[in-house]
Image 1 (cartoon, rainbow, N blue to C red):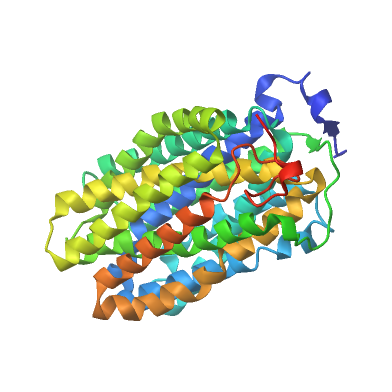
Image 2 (image 1 turned 120 degrees about the vertical axis):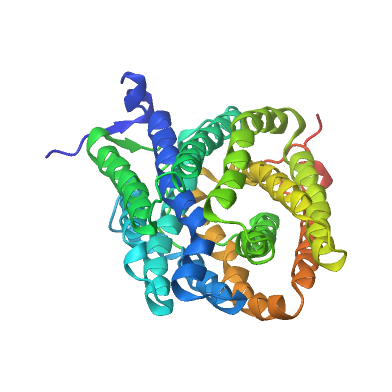
Length: 411
C-alpha cells in the first residue's frame, strides 16, 4: 500500500470526515471508551478481584504513571515512525490492553496489564497533544480544543451511560465490559490507520531532546499539575468506594454527570480562554481546586456526608476541564519545531511526582486520608501563584511577567 502524504493545505480539499481536525476528533472519541471504562471499573475490580487496600492502589497508580514519566521516549520513536502513526498505534495498544484486563485478577497481573495500557495511553496523549498544537491554528486553538474536549466527554458519557444502564440490569461481568470497551477503541485505531492519509505539519519537528530556559514556567506548571492530579485520580474515586461503599454503577453515574457537564462546559471555557486569556482561566481553575481539596479533607475531619463528596467530585472534574489553557499558553510561546519534543518532555515532567506520590501517599492515606487532600490543596495554591506569572498576552519573548520591559507586549 502506497503511503499518501498531504500537507494541511492539500487536506482542505478532502471531505470533512477525512481532514486532520476530524481525525483529532475521532481519536478524542476513541480514547475515552477504553480509558474511562477502565477507570470506572478499576476501584471495584481491584477490591473485588485482588482485595486491594490504599497501599496496593497506591502502588498500582505508581506503576501506571511510569510510562508517563518515560514519555520522553517518544522523541526516540519519532526517529523511526511518523508522529501520526505512533499516536494511532499507541491508541490501539490502549484498547488491546484494556480488553484483556480482567484476565489477570491478581496483584502482579493487574500491575502488568496496567503497565501495557498505560504505555498506550501516555504515548497516545503525548503525540495527540503535539498533533493538536501543530494542526490547529493559534487563533482557533482555544475554541477547537474546547470542542475536542467536549467530544471526548461525549464519548465518555455514552460509555458511562451504557455502563450505568446495563451493569446491574444484565449482571455484566468485568471481563465482558473490558472486552467491549477495549475492542471498540482498538477498532477506532485500526480505522484511523487505514482511512486517513499522513498529514504533513507546516513545520518539521525536531527529533531531539529540547529543554529551553524560556519555557521554565510551562515546565513548572506541568510539574505541579501532574502532582496535584495524581491525588484526585488515585484517591478521590477510591474514597467514594472505600468510605461510602459506592458500587460500580454508582461510581459510573458520577462519571456520567461529570462528562455530561463537560460537553457544555468545555466549549464555553474555550471561548472564555480566547476572550480572557490563559492566566485568568488557570487562576480560576486553581482557586476552585484549593476549595475543593480543602472540602475533601473536611469530609474526613468533620464527618461531612456522601452528597457533598459527590458534588465535590463533579466540581473537581469541571475545574480540570480548564487544563487545556496550559496547552494554548505553550502554543503561543513555543517555536513551532519544538512542539513534538517539548510535548514529550512536558509529559515526563508532568509525571515526575506521579511515579512516587501515589505509593507514598497510599501509606499516608492509611493513617490520615484528610492530610492527603490537604497536601493537594497546597499544591493547587502553588499552581495558582505560578499561573499569575503568565502575561496577559503570552508569545515568544514574552513568556512570563518577568520579560524585559522592551519585550512586553502592550495591548
